[in-house]
Length: 330
Image (cartoon, rainbow, N blue to C red):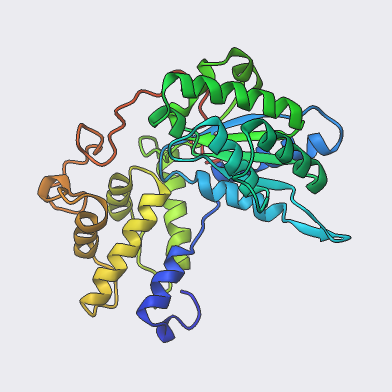
């Protein structure tokens, strides 16, 4: 229980739950891998480029944020040093607006001015002056979702040239289909031969269940409620797994919803009925009866079929995987 939980109002309680972060072993493995690449570069090694992929809700954005917090910007002799710079890929990307987004992330007050070539040169100058070490392009799948073949080819060429000129460690992040942009440019594909995959938690094997339940227990400890809620008990843990598909983002969203339902009903403990209502309200409106993991009629089957919340309609292809906990759960 968080100290003074009883003194919290409803808004503070929800904000406290939304701020809970659990850095499980698989997350830490990915973070240490990326940080190690930066240390190698600082020691004079060649830049290491990585493609980080994972489904929505698996923790990619939080991982990037932790990398930023470990390498904060500082001011030295009036010059801002930015070890890590994060670029948000535009929703409808072109070479020029990607260059503009890069300048915005670098703090250029005139990011939208100039030709694409001029923007690139200014970005490279800022990178050198600010001593940027790692450049991160998030949401790379936008090029697959909204960019045509010619646009994707153009941006792949631009990225390859920009990466070579910058000399930085570069991280590309996105949904699994982001891999497709690498197939467009062989030279870019070679530079990003290292793939880091953030997987959802599994629940098939005892070691998988042990890891997921240990995460639930840590979340339970962090909840701003008067007492532990028993999230890690086998039956509730199993239902929470199917309700979130092993994705922490959805798990936390479900917990927030359940606490809101609990509060609205003036209850002091989370009950299965609160989760059942929250699942329909915040995860899947059609999740009723046997399609709701908290219903007595639920069949304990993954909700990943067509039109279900965890359906992935685009195959992710062959890749190297690191399953959550497979190296750590004992």
